[in-house]
Image 1 (spheres, rainbow, N blue to C red):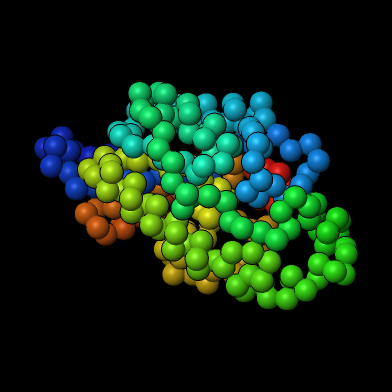
Image 2 (spheres, helix red, strand yellow; image 1 turned 90 degrees about the vertical axis):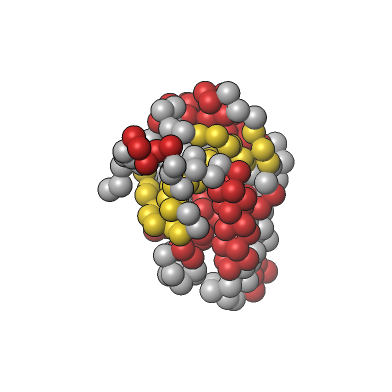
Length: 223
């Protein structure tokens, strides 16, 4: 795995290397287990706050010069300790927001809640786009726009973009040239995880994934 801190002294001053860290927010307080999507007011749980502090500590020695987050509360709260530790303000980018989803506000665990009701089955007719929400390709394109903006703002240094599981995972699959429809249970994007995009100039040369706050179940609603 690439060492993100490894650069020789003479090259450091003239470096064209820029790293954009995509951070998934921490655990959310969601006692009813609904799919909250873009609903306002969903905050980090105590565990989520601890996860945010953990990821901030993992980035403490990095050359972070720009922090940007989704406008949703849980993302802003996750970004706060990262920005604080580097003495930076948090910028907001709408392109980092959670994906639209027609099941927002409902319980959608397999075999439970909305998925058991025939009136919702039509929404599941096309898993490839998908038919129940924002198209995967649209998600990937807006996320790439956010990354490019952050990369420009932190050119030669490192930036942090705090977003959400599906947007981060969609962009990662897009950058790897993989099909965008997928099994949600197999997403590699744990709570407070880092998906670090390493650029040399304008060329993406590496994607490094890490879990400073540990592994979490990608299929748990409310996580």
